[in-house]
Length: 512
Ligand code: XMP
Image (spheres, rainbow, N blue to C red):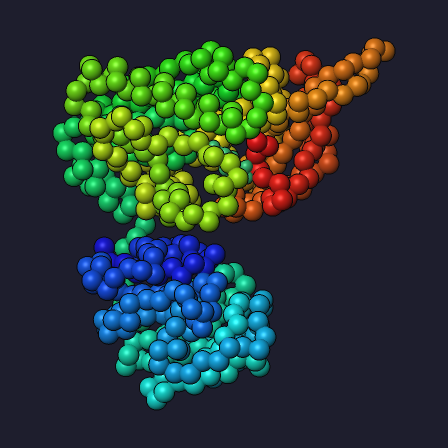
């Protein structure tokens, strides 16, 4: 399969470049700027894109790329910081007096190959400080703005292309066209699709696993379900799945997951472990959010490991642990600056220390939307594919304060009504995530003629692209009214319903 590589200089939107390339049907990988030329030559990409980044090329420790890449003869497109790196190597640069940020109009002087089918004036998205002011013979200046004398260039002989603005964001109206033009310059084959991804994954699993068996923890979430389904498609009944019920799942969750795996996907070996009493015992009287997360994480691994050992005794051929790791998990966990990981210790099934199993991760190169498309193609029901994300610690991080069986039940009932109404109204698909949470305090009310002192449910629905930032969903009043009235009437013990109107940041999506 022919591919492109995107060298990441720390841009917030480097992933976006990668995704845009894949959307065009070409496989693309994001790599660190410290990648060696030897490694690039081994990958043998048809084109290289140098991403933007937060640094100025003038900074002392500004990230650099191995200069030998410029002699590989592979077409290179520099975007923003990448554009300036090329400018610095071949021409003259000066620190811009003003930082330019936002929508700008460029004046296209020559279309060249990179700007084919662009108009004389085009709207782009700029975000830069330094300016490329001079380039030697061989470089053709394609565009300028009123403050930026060289906004794009190309050098056909050296196969170098550059744009000062971001082609990958939607505010650059012809961004996709420019990237497509670059792909044409690279003469790359468009052979990346969900179908080819399925075939590649199946071949890889076959090669890796051979005649051995795989064990896997499944949560019912999209990633682990799709990964398990792919492995199952490849090795059939040599896949063993373990579902740990920690007692803080959504209403009917266990039954729904079992039904999908057994009936729809015809999995044979599924072990459901009910460890809810153990989890609840360890969590009793614990109200600190991080403490809760740690107890759940450790207990989960303990229960999972015990079950795996038990299964391994009967099936000694199990040599692999399947995981639903996706591309952003892998790339982002390698970045210590990822904000979310500092704020909450996320719970995910990682390889327990004592386990001698090798990991098989069939989705490790895929983005969430690609995983969903692939899942649909291999016959996973839409209801499962379109499910909102659910945190590993489950309702524990939505029950603020102490967790008791009674409080879990109240939350499950209220949450089920909220989700049912969102689905009925078509708003489930329009939100990134929606759920009910339970406050640790009560409020006074009146039912009939009597005073009540009952629980408070908070409804949270957010829109987001990647969960790093989120906005509260603007649900219609009539829908909120219906949900509130149903919860107040149907869930015993709830006397008040509130709607959360907090953005992330400063709030987070989950409560704890
Ligand atoms: P926050 O609350 O940090 O959540 O804004 C961002 C996204 O991550 C999900 N989340 C988790 N996912 N294990 C997970 O797999 C966890 O421990 C966890 N905690 C939060 C959350 O639901 C939201 O989609």
